[in-house]
Image 1 (cartoon, rainbow, N blue to C red):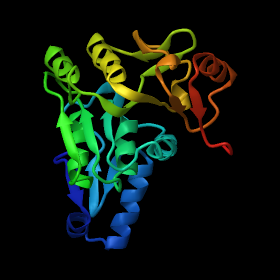
Image 2 (image 1 turned 135 degrees about the vertical axis):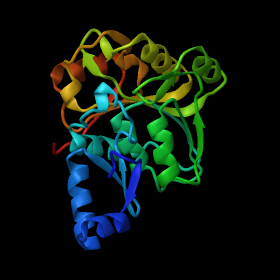
Image 3 (image 1 turned 120 degrees about the vertical axis):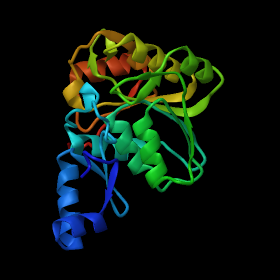
Length: 245
């Protein structure tokens, strides 16, 4: 059902599959744990928002439990009334759910999936979708129009998601189009936060868009290892993860 449309309600599931609401909700919770969908009030939404050609990064959402831990930690840095930049990524989608009870939030993003989820779970938020060229199959915008608008915006916090991180190279991304937007996000935020599960530590990619010196704090689901912690200390970036992880 979610491959055909962007969201589905519990009532629709019960009717189509002849199951009870308890069973429907239980199955939705299990599917969310597997990274197949995102739970919203009264049902669920597709983690890829029903994109016909999903982004390579989102074809299979992995490490969802790690991302939930990271999102819960990062959510504590968002206060009522804040303006925030949300980078494109599954982890920022999970973060959006974690801050859904915050009030008077202004969200700036180039990710259409984030806009659609905000519309579903944060109807009272102010949402600014950056214009620009549309990256087919990835549900995001980029280019000079997006950068021109970003030049006029300054927010409280930016939450960034890299493709990977390597010591000495920094936070990595795959394309020049993502590079320029990510760099500008960081430049136009009073504080920048890195959201990254530890599976990305040591994973390389094509381009570096930031070092740990660009972030106030990095959130991970567990200890990222001595090399990462040492480089973070050198750059003055706080590393936060559950101490019992």
